[in-house]
Image (cartoon, rainbow, N blue to C red):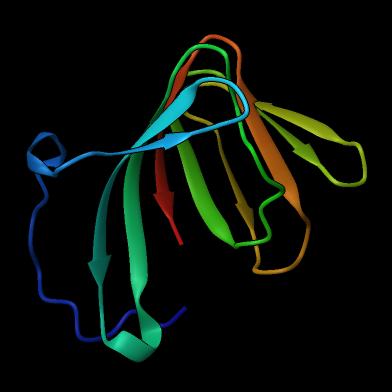
Length: 113
């Protein structure tokens, strides 16, 4: 990721139109902004997982993810499981380690990818 052609600006996340994404169980609500040139877009999201959320896919996209509230469990394809609580983050590269998340109690995340 190269951060270029991004002017200084602030984001009021409450003013960003939400999109809803069903999981195998529960749902995710995304508020999304994109920055930079078309050939190097950086997606920035505020994501709310409902209680009981379980992803409907294995993700291979790279992310930098910060847990702001709640609890997020992320399982890697090799069987390892990591739990994030507020103030914890993870990072993973594109195509590096397939991962799948769930949130028994719900969570709010800040994600850059």
